[in-house]
Amino acid sequence: QVQLVESGGGLVQAGGSLRLSCAASGSSFSINALGWYRQAPGKQREMVATITRSGSTNYADSVKGRFTISRDSAKNTVHLQMNSLKLEDTAVYYCNTLIQAVQGFGWGQGTQVTVSS
Image 1 (cartoon, rainbow, N blue to C red):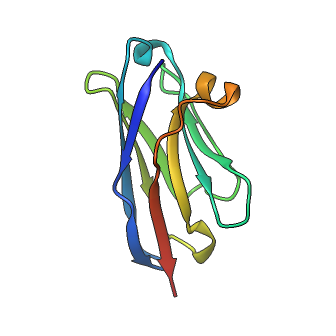
Image 2 (image 1 turned 45 degrees about the vertical axis):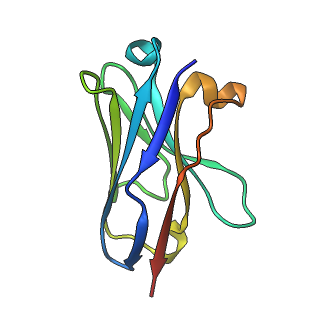
Image 3 (image 1 turned 30 degrees about the horizontal axis):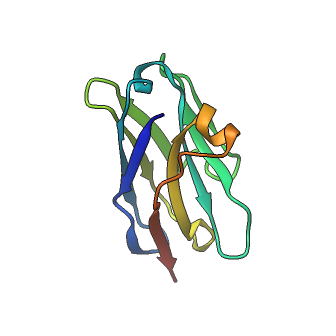
């Protein structure tokens, strides 16, 4: 199992930027695709962005052109650069491996992102 710890959330005004980081540990990191997910109050958790070991990325339509996912396999980290933040981006953001996310385990504490007007 891969363990993941998110950081970098906070309060930001609409239009601002934040960079989230996720530190991963466990032997599977180097072979797993990773993703960022978010859960807003009263809503189901949704995929935000994913990145494969080779660097191929996929984004939710709602964040395309604003968010960028990246990973540093040597440091076992994955990042989410969030620009042009909107009120609707307010949520708890989680990272996870795709396999663990699909199978429903491995979720950490997440990091809160709050976008204010």
